[in-house]
Image 1 (cartoon, rainbow, N blue to C red):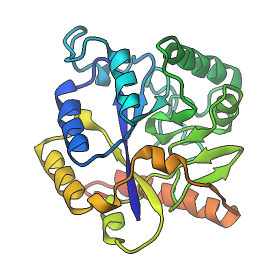
Image 2 (image 1 turned 90 degrees about the vertical axis):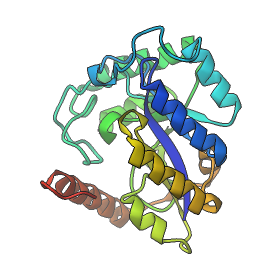
Image 3 (image 1 turned 90 degrees about the horizontal axis):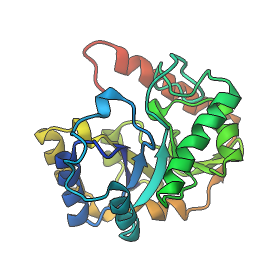
Image 4 (image 1 turned 180 degrees about the horizontal axis):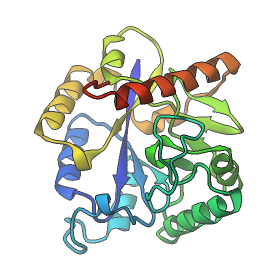
Amino acid sequence: MKISIRMDDITPDMDWVKFMRFKTLCDRYQVKPLLGVVPDNQDKKLHIVEPGTAPVEDFWHYLKKLEQEGWRIAQHGVTHCYTTQKMGCFPLNRLSEFAGIAYEQQYEALKRGRDILNRHDIRTDIFMAPAHSFDHNTVKALKKLGFRRMTDGFGDAPYSRWGMLFYPISYRQSSVLKKCGKKGYTTFVVHANTMDDKDFERYEQLFAAHRDRLIPYSELLELQPKKRGTLGNVREYLMAVTKFVLVNMRGLSV
């Protein structure tokens, strides 16, 4: 199974030391991730460094440079602040920036986020929902705004649903790594802000051992999505609910 990488929570005030450390790994193994950029970060947990202390002179110019190097960009919510406890269509978490909010409000918020990116010459048709949480109104608003891809869902290949193209994330990384001979594609989700030394060591070992399975995210976007049936959609929903329960059981890690 081929593996792509997405990096969440990319902001001007992220932990740049950890981001650059992970980027060094990516450069060493020619990994070209998808970056989830928060247009207007208001999440206090993501305010990590003081303004003006980043190692790059201009955050938005730096993103354009990464694009030129083959990295891809997604809009990662708008403010990254959770406003509801709705689980949405992909029930991995009981908190959301969007699920449960009226369509008009979602549309205006998402448009504001898109416009912020556009003003900085960042144009993307890929959306990354904070906490993997969105509902039908989110999808409807995204489509009206010109988005046509979302990085979420479970499965072994991109698929189409609700008039949108979905690029699945891994259910459990350890299981994917054991499936060396299995055909298919998945995405590993990386939060560099919260990584520690052991996490960096694990990813370096992963990249070294599976470098022949790593693909740029742009390659994933070139695949022809499948039309998935009702049984596949039900299976995905049940997998998400199961993972939610397991993750929230004390002492159990998945």
